[in-house]
Length: 295
Ligand SMILES: Nc1ncnc2c1ncn2[C@@H]1O[C@H](COP(=O)(O)OP(=O)(O)OP(=O)(O)O)[C@@H](O)[C@H]1O
Image (cartoon, rainbow, N blue to C red; front, side, top):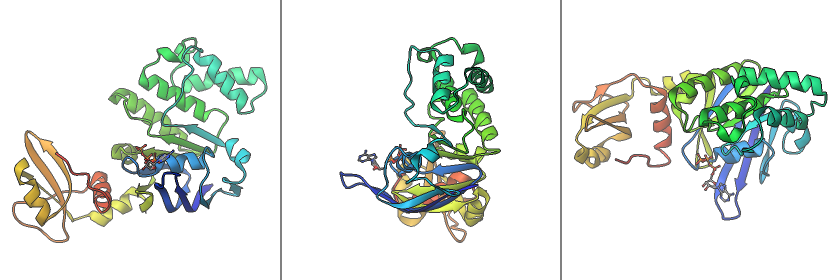
């Protein structure tokens, strides 16, 4: 099973070109879609989820023509949007039952069992009588996954799901997602590199509506191997260093600025070579398109 996106473009009425000829092949497993704010991730996710129209291009889930056979894809899709609307006063159990019904599970007994087992999987069974309005952010996201996974979808889309979760909830959420990735396509759209690093066997980076890379995280790392150097400088020296070097990221550490640069050879001047991580890959790609360096 794979999702094949070809030459997808979308320009909004205000002239913003959110997707510019995007082509991606997404295999089974967890796929990370990384990009900064405004990259076009949500536009792409909503288009695949048939919630908005593209101007041109095609999307196929195996033989299903996603953009033209919306009903067929909706039956096989689980979607957790970025702003997940809740019905604050309805109990968790009732709402999930309702969603299962909408997804075509007509038999009441079968639905009851499915709702119970799904709530168990996301660790909300004990909370089943509580209304969603009383949930914490992490509980809400776990409910969001429950409603996305019900009905056995072959494609699951989750849009920036870990924003605002504490580390324990984030871990729980990671575990849930990685289980889902075992026999479906799960697209995880995020600007958090750590999410992709932890979970995804393949990935893409998009920025300003274009694909900057796609492949396996390991292949992306190999491309910057031996090219990342680090040095601590004073904040006031940043401008001078940016003139001389290809600065890809900065981090404040104990009041000093830890600078990471990309260089084909050893830059000298007190720079130390470091083992690249996925964040370096991401910043190296993104820095060609947008300036993310601020202090
Ligand atoms: N309905 C809309 N009308 C006009 N412009 C829009 C609309 N939705 C998104 N945009 C613009 O399209 C671009 C891509 O937005 P999109 O929400 O797809 O990005 P994103 O990668 O999901 O960003 P974020 O991480 O901030 O959610 C942005 O410049 C955004 O301002």
